[in-house]
Image 1: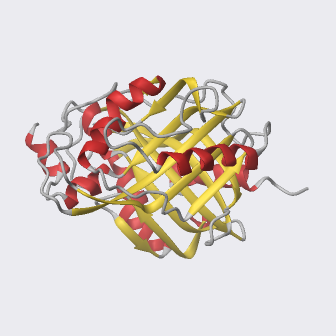
Image 2 (image 1 turned 45 degrees about the vertical axis):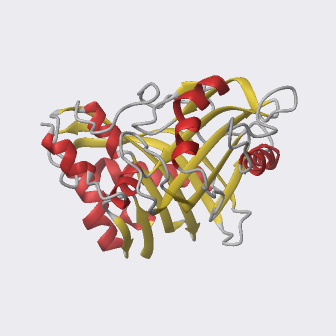
Image 3 (image 1 turned 90 degrees about the vertical axis):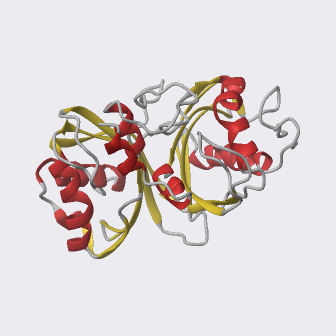
Length: 322
């Protein structure tokens, strides 16, 4: 009997993170693109030495706690079979992580992850962990918060781990229609067609879960107030959708770009004055679809990298708040 590749990968990652074993889940010549300050790592030994081992040392008794885990054929030109997941790395944060001062308390390091598989091994990965959220948990986030800072919840339907119910391509079609309409907006109101209302792609009671600094919000009005309005004002020429991967699985879909967005910094954002410089943004979006509408959206953005491009080192700033 063929083993579900999603379940096989979940088991392999769980073993890798719990005891450091099963390193063969990563191909010898794998390439990992990881959030700032890690960035690109090539080869299994380098990935272990500069990403996995440092996180396991920082979070004692670390283990993964997955919220979503889906898989499917990538419809973008890069192709391949990919798994995408939202997880937390759970442990006691009692040693520095990439230079960030530990809290000596329980920590949930959330991450969005995309894995390309060949012969049951990871040959390519993109990973955005939310270090600013870890700073928030430690009481040392050097950014204001627009929305509500929460630990990402599992889907309301509690069926996001290797789901079996629903049409993955139909779910992805809803997301792609939303993305196509979202790209064009009224510069005065920030409104885009096709987002809300009778023919909209978002559910009336949508939930949007965002990175530290942005936070999470409820319904379209909350999304606009706590994220969209400030983002469009700061980056009015932003161009998104440069995705290397788009997959659908049951009632879920996921997309990601590395980077996804290019833009220029034209108004202040999260307390940082604008200076007109060109910026890029690494993005991952995970969606739950209900009756042809987006009910929940989990978003990981590499804000450590974004602010580093602005000339700020959030790790140094957070440590200074100790």
